[in-house]
Length: 88
Image 1 (tube, helix red, strand yellow):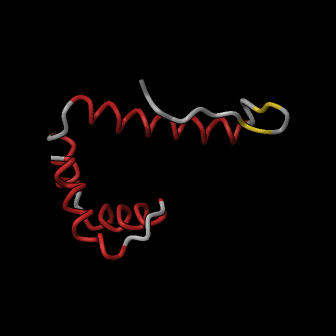
Image 2 (cartoon, one colour):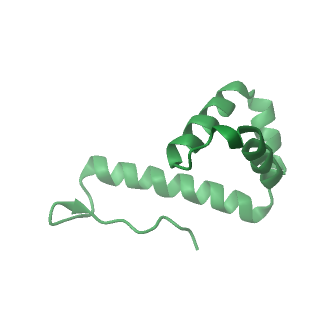
C-alpha cells in the first residue's frame, strides 16, 4: 500500500517536481494536512513490518537528533556529529 501511495503521489505531481527535498516536503505536508486521522491510520495498518520499522526508526532518529541539538549533546569541536540516519 505505501509504495503504491508513493507511486501515485509521484505520478500525480511529477510535472511539478524539480528534484530537491523541498518538493517532497511540500507535497507530503500538503497531503498529510488533508487526510483525516482515520485515513492516516489505514495507511499505517497496511504497512508491512519493514515499512513500519523504517518509518518509526527515521522519526525516532530525527526526534533524538533534535533533542541532542537542543541539549548540546554530541558536540565535537563545535559541531554536532551525525550519521546518515539509516536504521539497520
